[in-house]
Length: 116
Image 1 (cartoon, rainbow, N blue to C red):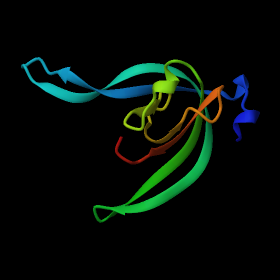
Image 2 (spheres, helix red, strand yellow):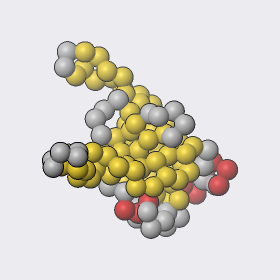
Image 3 (cartoon, rainbow, N blue to C red):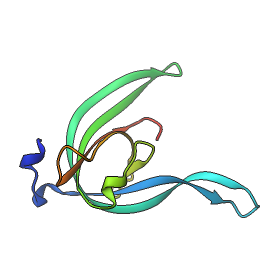
Image 4 (cartoon, rainbow, N blue to C red):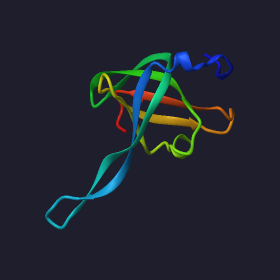
């Protein structure tokens, strides 16, 4: 789905973007945990799946192309963040962020089944 054919009607999914932050555990220690930064609507474009052998087992992965509206929040998304589908709870590692090609949209390549 090229970005010039995306419309508001294609934004069918609610996603949340989480950033790793230092969180106090209540015992004086800090832990690196993901915290939600914001949520928005998104359009998913399925890019297929792949299988990789990891730790002597077969693991299925699903790759998506995701379009979100360009905004102050979405232009700051990094590949060290993660994306969650709010409805299903599926967590995606963000592989690629393209916030410069199209002024209206931020394009992400995300992958489920891999560490965020």
